Amino acid sequence: MSSATLVRNEPVTETQTARGVDMKLEVVVLPVSDVGRAKRFYQDLGWRLDADFLRSDGSRAVQLTPMGSPASIHLGDKPVFFLVVSDIEAARAELAERGVDISEVFHRGKEGPVNGRDPEWRSYGSLASFSDPDGNSWLLQEVTTRLPGRVDTDLTTFTSSTELAAALRRASAAHGEHEARTGGQRDENWPDWYAEYVVAEHAGKPLPR
Image (cartoon, rainbow, N blue to C red; front, side, top):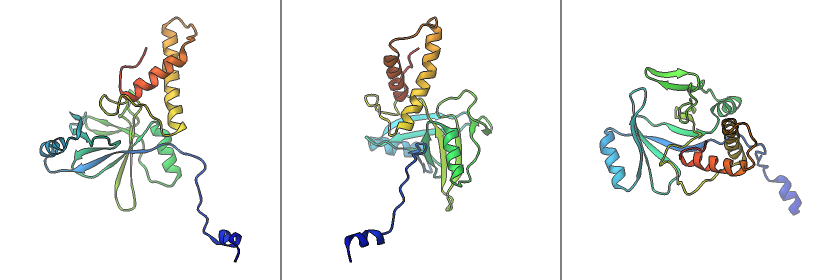
């Protein structure tokens, strides 16, 4: 039997040629019985404390990250897996097209979830949820500007052209407002302004105006 015949008889693996929206597994909610005790335990391991605050709905948000890890944990009462996206509507639409029974986009209100994206378009504010056939819960969360401490401020990385393009579109919109504030004159140094904006947004630092 020739090598050509062997190749023809091997199973063909289909490869995806069109890249979709980036969805990064970034946070896992870890069920704990005592948040304070769990927080102390993981801090004693040397994990970075990213957040400890009350959300608008009254729930407590505690996030910690193992040193050097791109993913974090939330301390909570039931397991949930967070997928961070830069465009919540596009990510939801893509999953729906793939046959996923996904919720409409919503945001957190004082009385619980409210339909529609965050009215102020705040980073971390717009969400959508779905479950897999075994009941595992997934939560899409739109993140465009990082809160301080969430990333290495000395490193700005993008894992795909789609993600970089979204950052550049946000920089373009902000730069248009910048030019309007400066009298509508064309900014010949716009590449430098774009670069400063993208790096600052990624690191959660004050954005240029």
